Length: 125
Length: 125
DNA sequence: TACCGATATGTTTATATTTGCATATTGAAA
DNA sequence: TTTCAATATGCAAATATAAACATATCGGTA
Image (cartoon, rainbow over all chains, first blue to last red; front, side, top):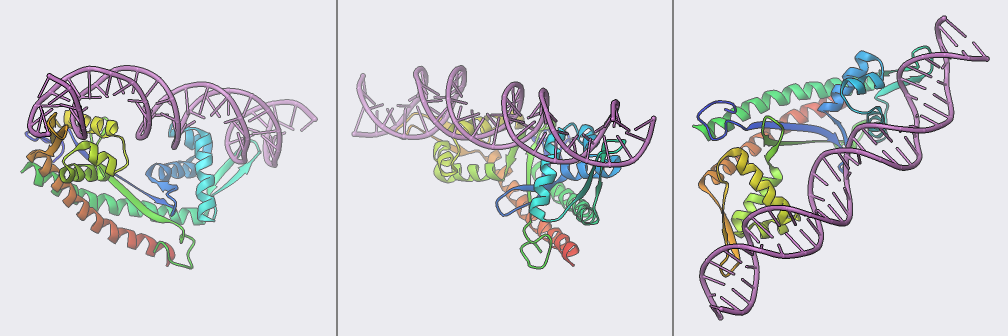
């Protein structure tokens, strides 16, 4: 398996990514966006979540906007003004989708682990 | 499931990709590279395979070079000169890795199909 | 030995993504 | 009513990635 000694493949790892996208290929939700949304939930703001993940507020804001336009429902509820300048929380729809996606991620990890193990095993004898 | 009516998610599809990469994130082999290698095998040249896949020879050549450097073995054997200008074939090591990767792809597809089905089911009731 | 087409590779150009910047808006609290 | 920090958004600058271009090399075969 990757990382083990005595193999041609020891310096190689299997990686994967999955995401929701539209017919036209526009990406809506992937693992990193899931993390962003989780952080929005935890931090209460897009700004904080963006900082935490080292991406620009501009990008996150745009990504969310696009996703919501395509999905045709709100993932987050954003408020402006107030003492803290504003805040963002997840909607129920958003929460549902995200928890389903998180569940999917777990399933994927399991499936991937098994097949990857087999893959490296078949290569390395 | 994606594509069905009566769902908030009807216009969204689940997609995925997987690949071999190094610790530092350099990508070595993914589905599209697998296709390139298959075409190299079939066509007998990098040039032809690149054309067939609408990517530049320059890129494919560079990708192969990088992959081989990282993997530390040759995936292809390249010849220059001669009547046809040259030719490229897969090495045994290359063939082995590629068939293992192709097998992996099949396994993935199965696993993914099952989990994806469950995902959309859980979303759309 | 001249020719042809593929390999080999540096360099430049084009395209796509992100970031960064600027500026406006908002509204609770001091 | 001034303040503050987050949201909202257009636009320019910076990065990353790939394509295009330009040559050089190579070696069977005509």
